[in-house]
Image 1 (cartoon, rainbow, N blue to C red):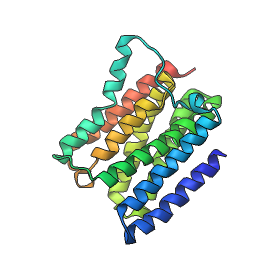
Image 2: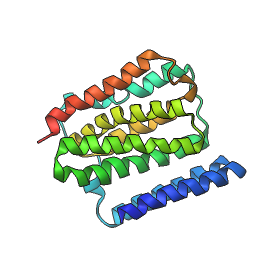
Image 3: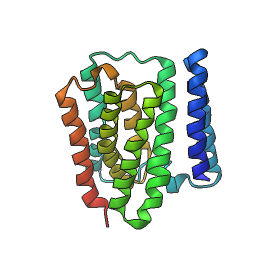
Image 4: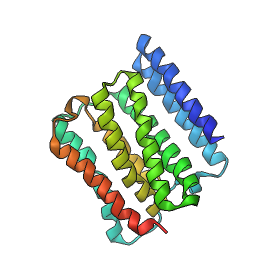
Length: 216
């Protein structure tokens, strides 16, 4: 059943993307928002929400909350690189739905499935799949260099997100960080700030450090 939801996501995105080009950006945004509402409704109906991490992070010592603050590093760097922040509402709604779907697919279904073969392998493979998935942006009109940058960024950040999800048993922190990262990203700023790449590398390194504490 999860594979049908993934296929439905891809087909819906392609279909409504084409419709949005001749109508309004709201067509795609509202369609994907409806899709993610249907997906989460099915997850709660089938009782999979806790297993997939659609729940608050488990209780932890106060010092652990510093991990969540580090997840905001990349959105802050995006803002500094772009120099301004003025997202359009349809784009923000679309990012809300897309980020929710990606976290459920990659850190929910895929990561949880792969964990039976080892936590470290699950984090790396799910991050690689998350990164390769970003090549689909070429179909949406993104340039090759920008898409390539997204792929590298997604792999590094995906390791961090995967480790945090495993450690705290929740998709919510990484969903929020993912949404803020995407909504603050500006194509024009890609590659213009070397320290932005250092930030991306730092996220990957942070994820690797977390992996040492969550792997068996």
